[in-house]
Amino acid sequence: MQTILVQPRNQEELQLVTQLMKRMKIRASLVEETPKQRKKREILDSLERSVDEMNAYLRGEVEMKSADDFLKEL
Image (cartoon, rainbow, N blue to C red):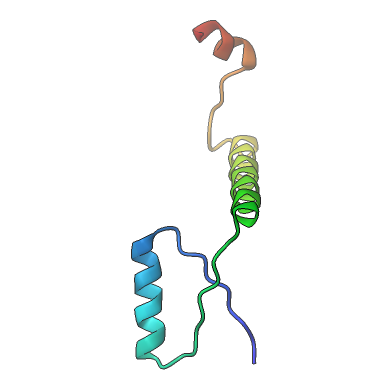
Protein backbone atom coordinates (compact mmCIF):
# COMPACT_ATOMS: atom_id res chain seq x y z
CA MET A 1 0.00 0.00 0.00
CA GLN A 2 1.16 3.55 -0.66
CA THR A 3 1.34 6.44 1.78
CA ILE A 4 -0.06 9.91 1.12
CA LEU A 5 1.40 12.82 3.05
CA VAL A 6 -1.00 15.73 3.57
CA GLN A 7 0.12 19.04 5.06
CA PRO A 8 -2.89 21.21 5.89
CA ARG A 9 -2.15 24.93 6.08
CA ASN A 10 -4.47 25.59 9.01
CA GLN A 11 -6.70 23.97 11.63
CA GLU A 12 -9.77 24.16 9.39
CA GLU A 13 -8.06 22.17 6.62
CA LEU A 14 -6.81 19.65 9.17
CA GLN A 15 -10.35 19.09 10.46
CA LEU A 16 -11.74 18.76 6.93
CA VAL A 17 -9.17 16.17 5.90
CA THR A 18 -9.58 14.28 9.16
CA GLN A 19 -13.37 14.14 8.77
CA LEU A 20 -13.07 13.00 5.16
CA MET A 21 -10.70 10.20 6.15
CA LYS A 22 -13.07 9.05 8.91
CA ARG A 23 -16.10 9.04 6.60
CA MET A 24 -14.22 7.03 4.00
CA LYS A 25 -12.95 4.71 6.74
CA ILE A 26 -9.35 5.29 5.71
CA ARG A 27 -6.80 4.62 8.40
CA ALA A 28 -4.85 7.78 9.19
CA SER A 29 -2.43 8.99 11.81
CA LEU A 30 -1.27 12.46 12.77
CA VAL A 31 2.45 13.14 13.06
CA GLU A 32 3.49 16.36 14.75
CA GLU A 33 6.40 18.31 13.32
CA THR A 34 9.34 19.10 15.51
CA PRO A 35 10.35 22.77 15.63
CA LYS A 36 13.39 21.94 13.51
CA GLN A 37 11.24 20.19 10.87
CA ARG A 38 8.78 23.09 10.84
CA LYS A 39 11.56 25.66 10.35
CA LYS A 40 13.05 23.60 7.51
CA ARG A 41 9.64 23.31 5.83
CA GLU A 42 9.02 27.05 6.18
CA ILE A 43 12.39 27.85 4.61
CA LEU A 44 11.82 25.44 1.74
CA ASP A 45 8.30 26.80 1.16
CA SER A 46 9.69 30.33 1.10
CA LEU A 47 12.35 29.35 -1.41
CA GLU A 48 9.76 27.63 -3.58
CA ARG A 49 7.56 30.76 -3.58
CA SER A 50 10.59 32.88 -4.51
CA VAL A 51 11.46 30.59 -7.41
CA ASP A 52 7.84 30.68 -8.60
CA GLU A 53 7.89 34.49 -8.42
CA MET A 54 11.15 34.67 -10.38
CA ASN A 55 9.80 32.28 -13.03
CA ALA A 56 6.68 34.45 -13.39
CA TYR A 57 8.95 37.47 -13.87
CA LEU A 58 11.01 35.65 -16.50
CA ARG A 59 7.81 34.68 -18.35
CA GLY A 60 6.75 38.35 -18.30
CA GLU A 61 3.72 37.74 -16.09
CA VAL A 62 4.95 39.98 -13.25
CA GLU A 63 6.98 43.19 -13.13
CA MET A 64 9.61 43.68 -10.46
CA LYS A 65 11.43 46.78 -9.26
CA SER A 66 15.16 47.09 -9.61
CA ALA A 67 17.25 47.13 -6.45
CA ASP A 68 18.03 50.81 -7.05
CA ASP A 69 14.32 51.72 -7.27
CA PHE A 70 13.60 49.72 -4.14
CA LEU A 71 16.36 51.42 -2.17
CA LYS A 72 15.27 54.87 -3.34
CA GLU A 73 11.86 54.28 -1.77
CA LEU A 74 13.48 53.71 1.61
